[in-house]
Length: 59
Image (cartoon, rainbow, N blue to C red; front, side, top):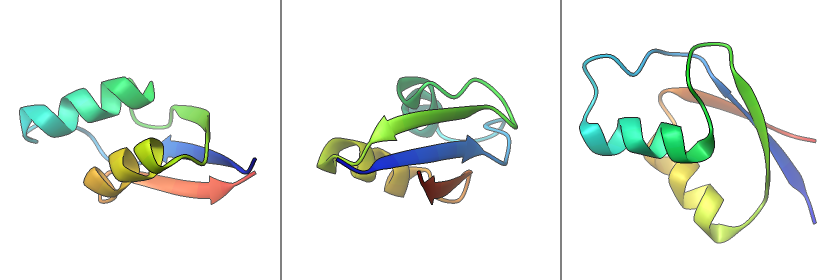
C-alpha cells in the first residue's frame, strides 16, 4: 500500500478545536513535524480537513 508523508507547515493557533484534534490524531504536534501514514480513506479525509495546515508527499 502507498504511504503518505504528512508535514505540518502552519500553526494550529486560532484554529477550530476540531482541526486541532485532527492534527493531534494524525500525530502532528508542531510546525515542521512529520509523520508517515498508510493511504486509507480515513487518513485522506483527515488530511483534507486540515489541508491548509499541512503538506503531503507520497513515499
